[in-house]
Amino acid sequence: MKPINEIKNHKKYPERILQFGEGNFLRAFTDWMIDKMNKEVDFNSSVVVVQPLKEGLVDKLNKQDGLYTLYLNGIKDKKVVSEDTVIESISRGINPYNEYDDYLEVAKNPELRFILSNTTEAGIAFDENDKLEDKPQNSFPGKLTVFLYERYKAFNGDENKGLIIIPCELIDKNGDKLKEIILKYIKLWNLEEDFIEWFEKANTFYNSLVDRIVPGYPKDKMDEITKKLGYEDKLVVEGEQFHLWVIEGPMWIKEELPAEKCGLNVIFTDDLTPYRTRKVRILNGAHTSMVPVSLLYGLKTVRETVEDEVMGRFVKEAIYDEIVPTLDLPKEELDYFAGAVLDRFKNPFIKHFLMSISLNSNSKYETRVLPSVLEYKNRKKELPKKLVFSLAALIELFKGKINEETVELKDNPEILEMYKKLWENYDGTKEGLKNIVKEVLSQEKIWKMDLNKVEGLADKVSNYLIQIETLGMNKAIHEVM
Image (cartoon, rainbow, N blue to C red; front, side, top):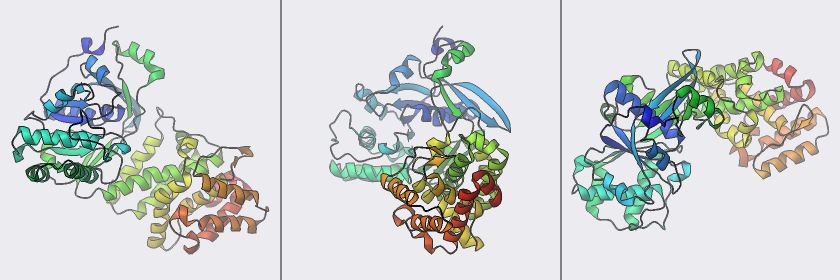
């Protein structure tokens, strides 16, 4: 069978974007968006991909002339769909470890306008061993500093040749942190004052928040996919239908990045904090609060949970009645996102096991669910039943048994040891359960506060734990509903 680049046409666009990272996520997210903007609103831009690590996919990309097939699977307009499209936005890939001069040559391209990146959360880091003369530098920010310095020299400090830099790494304030590290390299390498002035005035760093589940290369389905496509593609990538990109910074970027014009879910804002909070509280918070309840109820996946009559109602009510009222974005935006989250949970193409989400459940509850509990109490002057019930279920789950079957839980060793001792010393009485709750809630290392001081919380968690222990989860959940 012929390769994709011998079957499909590849339209060439000016190379206006440099992208650090050639992995599944960016190819299913930003490169897909660029392809859509090229085809629908004449964005007229192609991507030069830089491989941030020594080993990567650039050779495969170049063999296919930058072409690959993207499958978007999931629920769209309330229907289950699987759509495939050939992405044509990448012009070529560069491996700076053996094509360093080619990498720096891109800095001299007058049409270049954007820099995007996704080098994993560990990628935005300072390496004091990086040197200006290295070919290349070890860190991504080190490589980028040299690239910007090369551009500054190539255009004699022309302020019109600055770049728009949007990192997509999953860390808070990613644009600010990347800029901060580049300034450290400028200082470390004693680069001239004029370059610092050009760097500050001509270049704009944006913080961004990205959201799309990308399972990646569908290895187990490739024979079937190849037969259906009628060509060979070694870079097929799968993603979910949902996508969200929140970009924080000056609003003039809207004119240069016409995402809204072709209906992409890209939000330009001067503050992405509420959007990050929305994602953490609704998407991640719903995941974390459903896990102990659903596991003890006897289910294994997220999809089974939301499609179950009882658990589905539990999750929906936890989101709409207890999490959404604690957030400050417009209600229609929150309801839209909550609905999209429930659709994502039902995605038949993704098998998301509850046990895999249960990793580090205690710290996840502290960051993702507890803020909703405290804010709900602050606003409503009472505790949210479902989210507090989830905390009781979490304590029960860390007994290490589901329906008398032993399960291996993964968490901080100190936390596991604490639960082990508490449950080993449990005397079978209601008073004993109250003591367990009191001890767990007192752990400031986990919760960043003594939760026994939250009025009514210890009593409510204790009552729910007593119900779970004495009635079993299937009956206890009906009590809370």
